Amino acid sequence: MKRVAVVVFPGSNCDAETLAAAHAAGSDAYFVWHRDTDLRQADVVILPGGFSYGDYLRSGAIARFSRIMGAVTEHTRAGGAVLGICNGFQILCEAGLLPGGLMRNARLRFLSRPVWVRVEQTDTPFTCLYEKGEVLELPVAHGDGRYVVDPRTAAELEATDCVVWRYVRDNPNGSANEIAGVTNAGRNVVGIMPHPERRDAPALGGQDGARVFHSMEARHATQHAADVRAVDDRHLRV
Amino acid sequence: MSAFRVEVRVMPRAALLDPQGQAVEHALHALGFGEVARVRMGKHLVLEVKAASRDEALVRARAMCDRLLANPVTEDYDLAVEEGAAR
Image (tube, rainbow over the protein chains, first blue to last red):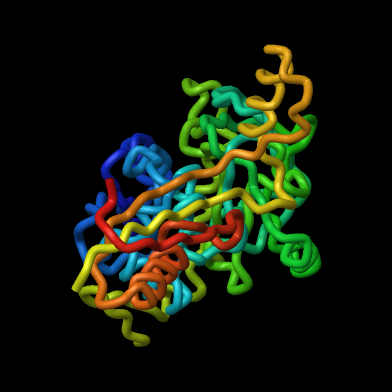
């Protein structure tokens, strides 16, 4: 059973669903407030969706400096797994923990509907239970979902297999290379624009997102985290 | 210490699609302003900064832009500093 910290920012609104999805996958999941400095021995950290700080200035720009982010950065440096969903993805980009950034949707409209994404990589802590090439139906709910990255970094992401999910059938927000989610070079930090936590049970219209959370519980997910234990806001290798 | 008025102009990177600017451009065309060839839209921030000199205000404002006010991946910024309180 993995310890999963779901960080709550002022304006987070997918925190409860994310916690429920992690519980449903068998994780020992709990909330951590943005003002906390301690991830309480988390194996995995999830930054949930929402509109932290009202998206003022830029989506994620202010949340990125909240107190807990120091511990999240430490956790990342120690190789711990981190998932950012929607606003969480924006926060990870703003924090420089993932490459690129997210800008206003190409067609301006706020999008709240299902999209289809192809799983491109299965060697991350959040996709190891998927098959490469599987197409998932997941909902999006965002105004600033257009992934942008300079052409050199985009080529690097492709060459190093860091694109984890790609939109198929259509590119809802005009993202570069149809990118719906990416990972970092260390492959422990992952961001995704659609909401897997909103599709983890048949009653929610499908369960294509459930394995994102089940993957955390799979062995591969915590290859690193097994060696890393957070103590207060510091990480010790044991 | 004196007060300086710092104006920060943040614009989306020139190479990136600016859908808000495009929407405004289309609206202007619809109103008959056919002479408008291109609209780009950004943000304008006005700060009142206390500093010992104009140069110091500029250096500090640049640090604020680099850390928070602009995202170097998606935006460019420029600064104007003048003596006196922000209105």
